[in-house]
Length: 166
Image 1 (cartoon, rainbow, N blue to C red):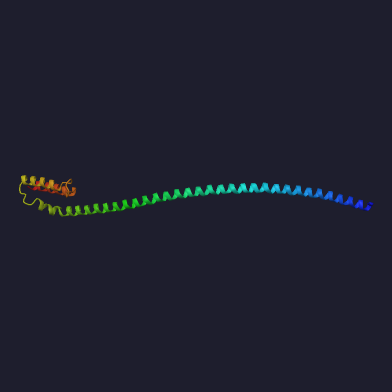
Image 2 (cartoon, helix red, strand yellow):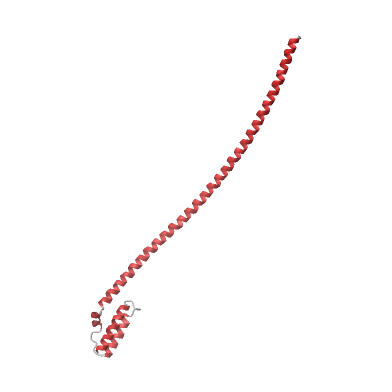
């Protein structure tokens, strides 16, 4: 072999050696990048998993809160219906009481002083007046069904008036 071919072999070997070193460095750099990428990928997957877990927990909490709101709403609606029923019942009771008061007032107005003369008609002495007074008290006493305080007061007033006249 001649010197130029030796020199050229030496150059090729030198180039191959440097190329091997450059390729080894490139391989190490790529391996380091791959490891960094794998590490970042694992961290990202872990973050994604953590976020999904948080989302699942939040979704369950929202569902539980919605169920609680629904149950509270159902209770409120039930109580609202019960209150409406009670309100209707009280209005009916109020109307009934007003009706009975109106009836009692009408009865009392019919038995005012002009009507009292009818109740004590035919009474001409003190004994018959007392007897008729007791009978009227038994009939119109407030504890009786048709009794009323205003009627009893009217009877008492008319009795005192007649007692003075007889």
